[in-house]
Image (tube, rainbow, N blue to C red; front, side, top):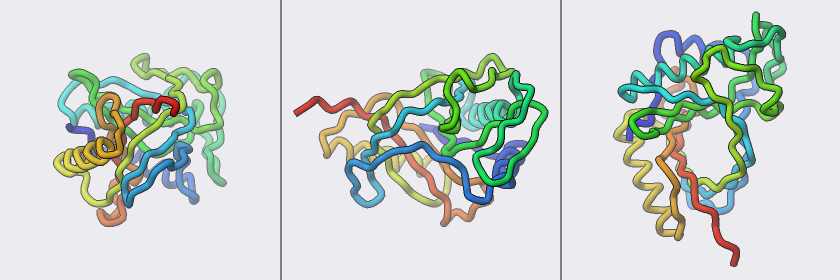
Length: 212
């Protein structure tokens, strides 16, 4: 698994722009915890809308390219003519529509490609989001879902993500859960955050539980 996204060069500017516009942090998807065991959880997520892009290539380069193109969309690369206030006390006007950045940024493998996704702020419905200038970006509703998660801090190297994904999969199996699809790597902090303060997660979608 190579689900990490490397934030370098222009990507730092995107994170810096988001951080400078909000003193209270960024919005995160809403969920409730159904079962917790230390850093391992089973969560029920509320519906969200994501902006996602499928990118070809080696995982590191694909992650950079996907993040950069999605960042361009939320920072004005869309068909809007007005500014949308950020979801924080300080607003920022932009030439096009500007959309609040949410956490996490997620990347998953899809066949030979990678899917990099941003969650859109909860104030938006699908018909209120501006159309991306980049035709490769897709806006997609994601329904309510059950998700297995493991939280951890530290480095973002691929080996660590692999190990945590395996740990999560074993725990979920021990609870009788069936995973769906590939693991998703999620990171909640800009790259200058000290390694010991970073919040990372691996997520697995779970099969619905049958009644009774």
